Every structure is written in structure tokens, then in C-alpha cells.
Image 1 (cartoon, rainbow, N blue to C red):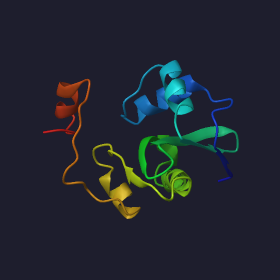
Image 2 (cartoon, helix red, strand yellow):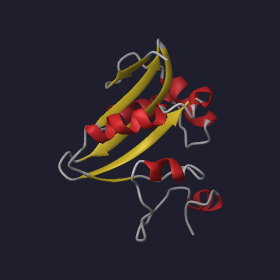
Image 3 (cartoon, rainbow, N blue to C red):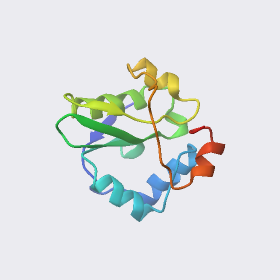
Image 4 (cartoon, rainbow, N blue to C red):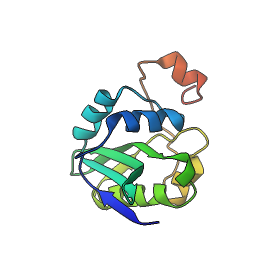
Length: 140
């Protein structure tokens, strides 16, 4: 693989981002909504193999001591090839002084545990789609 890392939102196909998130079973919105979310984030990472976008992720943060990571996604044909770890490490390098939280897609918890993340005992959430998130297993 010939990986290229991009730390800005220039020349991103936001409809492809939306399609990728849908394909990997994550929450997705139309491309314009994702564009707004990424552009308003503290840190963004896009990974390309040559010129093909194969994965991405973002963090929101105060830049001082708190951060949350969202939208870590790798297209299926590149999963299991350490691309997700590259994305996570690139994000974490840009928020080294911060406590970091995230919620993992169901079944992906081990991936984050390998990176040092641990389950929270006091995590709470207020989702717009409460019933849907409960059905998916994110809440009690």
C-alpha cells in the first residue's frame, strides 16, 4: 500500500464519506452534514491509498484536556490492514494532552482495547434517536 495522510478537508468527496459510513454500518447523513461535522472538528484525518480514499476519522476537542473521537471508518476491502490504527494514531498524536472518549460500533470494541481504550463504568448518553440506539445495543 502507498498510504497518504491528509489533515484537512480539501478536495474530499463528502457523498463518498456518507456512502462509506453507511456501508460500514455507522450513522450517516448526507454529504453536506458530514462536511460540516468534519470542518468543525479539532482534528481530521483522511487516508488514501494512492488517490483512493480508504479511511477517515475526526476528533472534537478543546485542545487543552478533553477530546472525543468520531467517525472512524475504513472501507471494507482495507479493513484488517492496520488502516484504522493509522487513523487513530494520527488523531491521538494531535491531542496528546487530552483525555479521550469515544463510542465504538458494536463488535469493534476489541480494536479500541488494543489501542489502550477501556470501557467506562459511568458513561451516559442522550441520543436524539433513543429507541434506535437502544435497539442497536448502545444504551440500556
